[in-house]
Length: 173
Image (cartoon, rainbow, N blue to C red; front, side):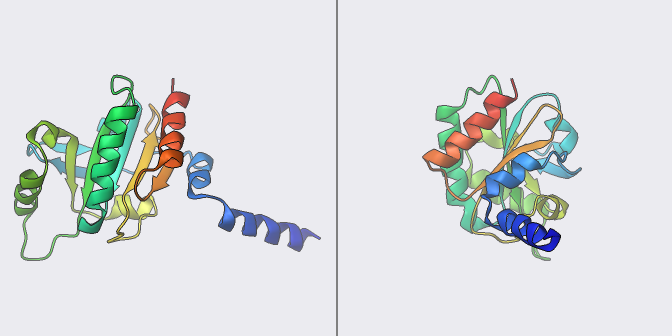
């Protein structure tokens, strides 16, 4: 009997939507350092104190999802209540410096968002948040004021995913 209950719970965990993982998780965002497109060094500590929506872009293939998320969030989420940050999680090839990556990103991202867009050249954030390296999907996380993950969605925005993010932001009030 005990084995069948354990198996049933394991099966439910596998079948649960990805958002369920995030709501069961109350892990703080792992420590990381990154560089904003302005050149400023930033860290996980800067995500504490105010609810945050973190868009992680693990590959160039995920850039379209990221752009769609940024547009949808700016239209549907009250930005005075939550900060929105984009983390470009890249694995720099040996021949490319961080400055080269920043230069290329600046060509694509409007200047008004340079301080909100961070280049991350280490992989501990991806590992800790269970983001597959080089995923073609963007990952969106909602963090509470303490920097704990309270929601997670992946892929491009749609009504259900946007609703889940909005609900998580409202829960931080």
